[in-house]
Image 1 (cartoon, rainbow, N blue to C red):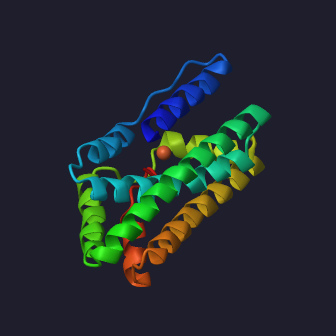
Image 2 (cartoon, helix red, strand yellow; image 1 turned 120 degrees about the vertical axis):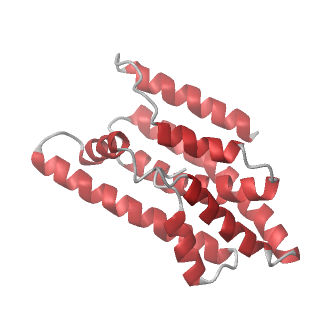
Length: 193
Ligand SMILES: [Fe+2]
């Protein structure tokens, strides 16, 4: 189900990107590397935690933001529908982790270590790709004038704070101590995935 959803998102967002007549841009190496660490994770529970709780959880905040700031109704609908699918993936992941932690509470330590390990593997990624960041600023500000750029930059900074806040909240709902939840959230990849 999840793979089918993701394939549909890939196709729908690609069509939307090409609808304006511009060709697709490039994917940053950082994004590809980040996805690769998820694909190569051999343990199902660890992969579920990293992908569904940390990654897709962060994407829920991103998709909500994209839906609310969308420049047209099609983009808004796309973001809203993708958000609905992702919410299902996150719910599945959170329930799986709740099941695991009820039986093996010490697995929380393994998950915290997995987040830190992944962050070290992705240490070469110093931050959000400037292309992604700038695109979000223009999207959120609604244009290229100086006041729009200023407003867009402020909204993107708010978005990143909101992503951190909701990751910490989700981790605490799974029984992680607030301090540990905060450091795990800080270790989460800079490219949201
Ligand atoms: Fe997903």
